[in-house]
Length: 157
Image (cartoon, rainbow, N blue to C red; front, side, top):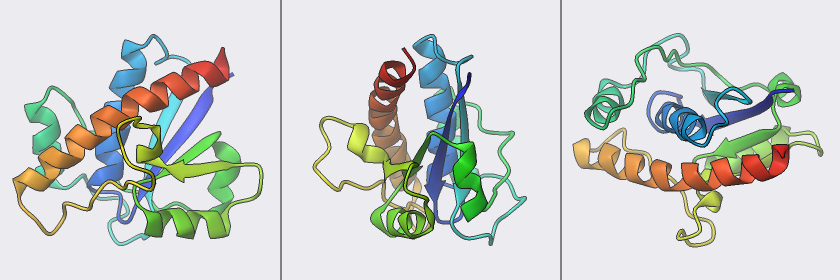
């Protein structure tokens, strides 16, 4: 049986697709790539069907990741039955998801899996800033992805 994860931000063009790309590669590195499906979505549908933000895509590519196949999607309440774990990039999206979620679905902040992150830590939205914001997002996402991979390994073994 495949374990399924969905990463969620606002528009699904920066943070959550970066996290999806990194987490997928991290899971493969832990030998879990064939046992875990990773998706991403946004709480809003403004960018649905569109590609990842070009700055996010470039940042990923500069560090050996390929996010070129990404197309933005909007998370809806009926998606909860598809996933074992839903991870929000920030507290606003976490609140939105928890209001929609049935009781049995685990919904958490993505950075809660980074042992070095303070409680309640978020992945900041880089959309209105420069390239350094995308570099910061990548660094935070890589750190949290290791923790997510360990959590999933414990869950499925």
